[in-house]
Structure formats: C-alpha cells, structure tokens
Image (tube, rainbow, N blue to C red; front, top):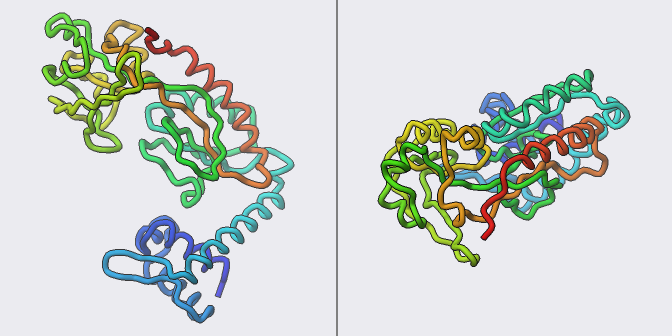
Length: 307
C-alpha cells in the first residue's frame, strides 16, 4: 500500500465530504477510492470514516489522522518544491483564482505581463464567482472581494470596492431618481443572482452605521453582473453591482449612480495565500508583481460619497 497516496485520498474525501466528489477531484474511480481508504483502515486497525446514506464524518481517530496527514503531505510537497529548485529560481506552475469579471478585467492583463517576465513559470488562472478552496483545490493565490473570515491564510489588501446602485439616464428621466432606499420598492429592478439567489439590497443610513435591507423583487434576474449592467443600460431597471462592474458605463454616462449617500462601506479587496514556512519564489514574484498593479487599477475608481 502506498501510504502517501492513501493519505492524499483520505484528505480529499474529508475535504470534499464524499467519495464521489473526491473521486472527481482526483480523477480516480469511486471503487478504487473506497478500496484505498478501506486498505488504510485495515492497515491502521481502526475506523477512520463513518458513512451513512446522507453524510460522511470522521471518527476521532480519523480526525487526528487527517490532521497528521495534512502536515506530512505539506512537508513532502515543500520538500519536492525545494528539490525542484522552486525556492532558488522562480519556476514551476502557479495556480491563481479570481472572480470571473474582475479576473478578466484586472488579473488577466497582469498575468500576461507576468508570464512575459518569467519564462520558467506556467500559470493556471481559475476565473469563478465562487470561493475556491485554496487547500483542497491546490490553489496558490486567490483574489477575494469582501470581509475575510479569521483563518491561517496570509492576506495582502490591494484596495477597496464600492457597491453602487445605478440606472440609465433615460430610465431616470422617465421614472425619476429614487430619494431613499425604500423608494426602490416602487421601481423595476435588475438583480444579479450569482453566486447566491436574490438577497435584500443592503444600505447604510447617512451619518450612522445603521443598516437597512430592502427586499427587492426584481423584474429581471440574471446570472452574471455583465448581463445585469447591460439590461440596466438598456433601461430595464435599476441595478446594484460592484463598482468595477459598471465603471466604464458610468464613465461613459450610460449609467448613473443613485443613492450614493446610502452606500454601504466599501468592501476590502485582498490577495490571499496559504501560510507556509518558506514561500516558493514563483509565488513571491507574483505577489510583488501583481500587488502594485492591482492597487493602481483600484485606485482610479472614484471614491464613495462623503457627506
């Protein structure tokens, strides 16, 4: 039995919460996956997983073994990187993830220029409007917009991002400009429903930290911010998006920001990576290259209204 392989399989099953999900990630048949875990349990002489029809949980022994396996696999990976020279020369594969629209607009241009400078680095850019798990999906760096949960990750802030409410000038000419958030209940609205279903639109009351949720019932709900912005430009209704998603349209006066004094506090934008004892040079080089570029890109966005 290959114990390192068995550890990898067990950790994947624990992270994904099921054998089928782990099998898809590792590209290993379900029967093979199940057999490897069973062989490991037989070798250890103890049960590691409790499987029911609804869920899979670790036993106490399984939880302790998975924690140890993570540490061992991390040390092996670091030893392999060091042996391959990744701590001496910037080379190897780098995996970066970012929100779809933000990544296409701001991260991809930086990646293209970065690769031109570092010919020994290959980069895989995962653009997705979901929080990819850096550990289980083997991702080196993530761009995250919003408050970060407490974790062992290392975060570098590159700026902030407003959440803006906007509509086309033609729409506002016909329907009027809303004076306060509850007015939106009388307007047709366009909502982007990714990555979660339509949620109330949250506003901050001027001169205080009090928040107000407005339960929008959208006339149009779409699955991408680009589609929501386009619909708003064409006068379908008022939309609410992150500022970078409508910055060009606002600059060209295809959309106008309303309710500016009610905007919530801007959300932080971070580069996030797993804490390591020694950082591979390829990751250090990417951080040093990308941080000033992203800070510059976000700094040109106008600041929110200040009473």
